[in-house]
Structure formats: C-alpha cells, structure tokens
Image 1 (tube, rainbow, N blue to C red):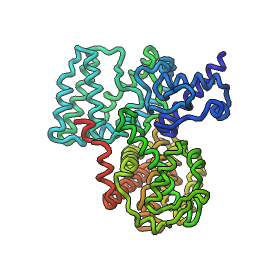
Image 2 (image 1 turned 120 degrees about the vertical axis):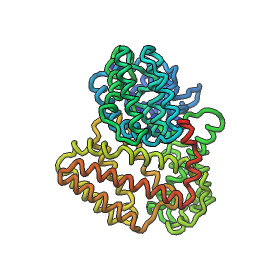
Image 3 (image 1 turned 30 degrees about the horizontal axis):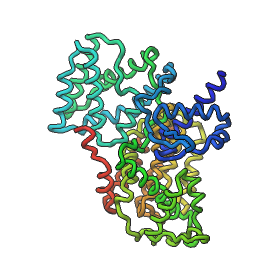
Image 4 (image 1 turned 90 degrees about the vertical axis):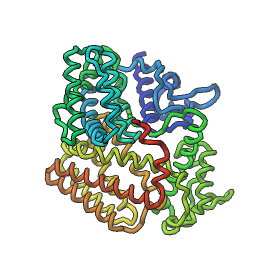
Length: 491
C-alpha cells in the first residue's frame, strides 16, 4: 500500500510539472490510461488515482468515455489534493530562499527604479496605511506593496515567476509590534532612498526579504507549499474569448515550429514534412490543430499539400524572408519571447555566478569546443546563446530556480520560429554575439567566475536589445505589446 501511494504521488507530480511548465499546454488531451501506464511503468489503478488528484486540483477536466483534457496550468484555490502537500524541510527552505534571492532581488529593485513622479503615489499610500499595531492588515498591505514593485516591471512572466514561489497571500505566523515597526522603517528608508535617486542599502533589502525566510521556516506548522515547476506561460482558459485565443495559439505554435525547422534547413525545398498523424503525435495536438497549422503554411505559400502526396516544402530561407506575415497571427509568440528575454537579461548575471561555482574542470573547455563547431555551421551559429544558456541551466543547484531557467531556455528557441528573425548568413550582429559568448567561456576557463557572470549578463542584454530592435523593424512589436497591457498590472 505504501508503495502504491509513492507511485501515484510520483506520477501525479510528473504530470503536474509537465502541465505547469507548458509541456502539456491547456487544451491538450492526455493519452489513454493504458498508454500512460506504459509511459510511467505503473498500474492502471495508480494512473487513475493520479488523474483524480489532478482533476481535484483543477488541472484536468475528466468526462466519461473521453480522454482527460488539460484545462488550466494553475491549481485551483479549492484543490483538495494540494492539502496533502508535504511540509517544507530545511533543504527545501534553502532551495526556495536561494531562488528568491537570485530572482526576486533584481526584479524588485528594477521595479523600484522604474517608479517616477505619480507612480510613487500608490506605494506611499500603501506604506502610510501599514499600522504595526494591526498585524493581519499590516502583512496584507506589505504583500500588496511588494507586488506593486514586481508588477511595475510590466512583464506578466516576471509577476508569475514571483507568484510561483508560493509566498503570495502568506504572512509571518508570529511577529511582534516591534518587529513590524522595524520592518516598516526599512521599507520607508528604501522607498525614500530610491525616490531621491540614491542607491538602496543592502541592509534594507535584506531586512525586507528576511520576512520570506521567516514565512518559510515557520511553514512546518502551516502546510507551506513547495515550489514546483513554476512559470507556466499559458493563461487560464477563462471565457469563450480566452479559449479561442488558446486554440489559435496551439495551431500557430505548431505552424511556427515547422516554419522554424524549414528556416533552419532541417527541411529543404522538395522535402516532405511529417504527416498529419505524425504531427499530432509529436506535438500532442488534435487533427483539427494539425490541419489548421498546415493550412496556415499553405496560405503563406511555404508548403503544398495534397491527398496521398503528403505535405511538401516549397520555399527556401530566401523565399521565406519575403512572405507576408500578419503580425497579429504570431503576436502571442513574440510577446512570450520578449518577456522571457527580459527576465533572462535581468537575472542571468547572479544566476550565472551561482552556476559557475559548480562547473567541473574540463566542462568549460568542452563548451568552448561545442561553440566553435556551431559557428562553422550555416544555421547553428544562431543557436550559440542558447547553448550557453543550457550550460548555465544545467549547473543550477536549486530546483525552483532550475525550473524557471529550464522554461527560459525553451522559450529562447521561439526566436528560430519567428518569421524573418532567422538568417542563414553570419551577419555582424551574429558575429559579435559569437565573440561575446566565446569571451565569456574563456573567462570561465580562466577561473574568473565573476567575470564570466558579468559577460553572460552583457551577452543576453545584447540579445534582448537586438531582438527588440528587429521586432520593431519587422512591425511585430506593436502587435506583441497588444497581447496584454503591461501598465494595467500595476496601475
């Protein structure tokens, strides 16, 4: 019996992580129970129990005689399975706090620095209402204040990343009025310093973030939720309009990924693409989705398709550069790409410094060799920044942080699927990124981890600037910014 419990909990967590990380996006129908039994090497009873828990948590919709469908990338607030979540131990607390420091510090600080003029009215008003003698209200307002500075970055992915760590809505279980008074004084000093153009003191930041550790350390008495695979990029499917938007994103995702493979040279003119059955199996989508994806490629003139003759590639990269793309058709993908680059550029320097400390001798030299080989290939030279990011991600020691960076690494590949961002030729921008990347690796080989981290930060900041510039030039920027109103996150 104990082994059964371990099996279904493990299966539940594996499926849950796939849903939360976007590997199984909203709208996906899971395979049948027999297929899942084979995939996870367990019994049908175990699979059935794991699916029931996912349904109770709001991730799945299950109807009689139909395969379960993913209905949300987030747990519902009423989820019963979550009530059995294990209490955090010291290792988990440390993992969570290290992740919080490496991710939240730079996000919080930039949100502070972005405030100007009337922007300060809201945080000053919240601070003015924080009465240390009223504990519950004090911590609720404190949470709102922190969320304001995170949201001031106008990036939904940043907001979700911080929320995914599990602190939202929680407060220190025990604190005295003196503790709250001292905490408020640090907040007041921090806001005043930044508002007046000064550099914030680390002591003030540490005092504020120390409250997160208090929450986590006292979690043994309050069923604290551990960080799982955070930052799902797909929205909740709420309302008809949202469901239609998600359906469009599913088939346009398939279309753009196939387009990226053609642009990268995987498929040449005259080659046949996978069949509809193969597309459905590989991307875990319905027949309707694969048909719509191929239809979009046909409308652009990229492929031809006919019964019994398959789907054939018609265009090479040069021709792809001339096709007319309606920006709205790819806006959600471009916005996801831009949001991910923003979070990456903002946080990669401290994360790279952390990862560099765990690089074994010889690994950096092997990375250098891989980059040199990529530079020699006609298309792979564009993947060099992704190679460096994968290397950093592989050496992250904290589970929650690794989940975030795993998603960022996957999202970095969206760039190869955005029409006209791919170039076969090595342009000056590609050459400069290659030199920066190689210089960063050489710095790591020399043992200078701080220098490597700074170089990695400069590299991905440059990638972000180049992509933003190209999106503006190609008229993608405005449509991408229209996917959601970033200012509405905080105003």
